[in-house]
Length: 326
Image 1: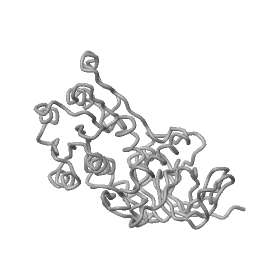
Image 2: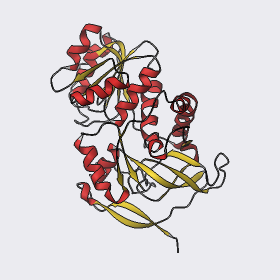
Image 3: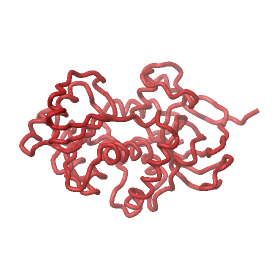
Image 4: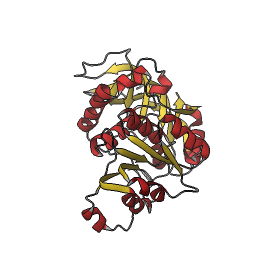
C-alpha cells in the first residue's frame, strides 16, 4: 500500500471553501521525472479558475491545484542525471502543488537562486516562465523599446516590470490604487496609470504608443490595446479576466503592421517548457542571484488555509505573490 501525504483538493467546482484537506498517495517518479518534497507552493490565478470549474487540468495530470513550488528532491526517476536526492529546487508543475509531495519533469526544475529563500523561490517558476516566454520570446521586446503591462501589481505584473526594466525597455503599467501604482514605480515603471481615473490609451497616445503590451484582461481591452500600440507593435494575450471575445478593427492591424499573439503555459509540451527553463537559467537566474531583481512577496498561508489564499488572490488586494507553507 502506498504511503499517504496531506494535500488540498477541489471537492467540487465553486467558491474557495470547496478547497479541503485530504490524504492522497505520495506520487512516484516516472522516467524523466523527479518527486519533490515541497516546502512552499505558489498560488496563482489559474488555481482559482480551476477551483471554480473554469480551467480543467490537462489529461493525465494531477487534479490537485498548484503550478509551482520549491522544496527538496526526494526521488529521481530513470534517465535523470542532472538532479540527485537532496537537491533543493524550484519547479514548474503540471498540477499537484497543493500537497506535501509532487512529481514533475526533471527538466522543469531550476536551482534555488543564491540568496533566495524557499518561499521566494516557490514564486518564481509559473510567473517567470510566463513572463519571459511571452514578453521576450513571443513579444520580442528589445532594448530601448516601450512596454506596457496591465495589472502591474500582480505576480505577473511585478515580474514583467522588473524584467523589462532590467533588459533596457521603457516600462509603463496600469494598476487600481495609488498604493499599487507606487509599488510599480518602485520596481522600475516610469509611468503608472490608475485605471480608475485615467484612460490608458489617452495617456500613451502622446508618446506614440508602445511597442509591446502584455495583457491578461481581454474583453474591451483588446481593441483598446491595439489603439495603444506603436506601428509594428505586438500585443501578447495571456488571460481573459473580462472575457475572450472582442470586436476588432483589422484594418489598423494591416495598415500599422500590428501583431496579436498569445499563449498559455500549462498545455505546452514538456520540451517547450524545458527550453524556457534553460533560457531562464542562462539569462535571468544570474540577475536573481545578484539581487538586481527579486520576487515581490504579498502573503503566506498554511496549506490547510488554501481557501484564505484564494480569497486573497480573488480580492485583487494583493501586491506580488501569495504562497502556501506546506
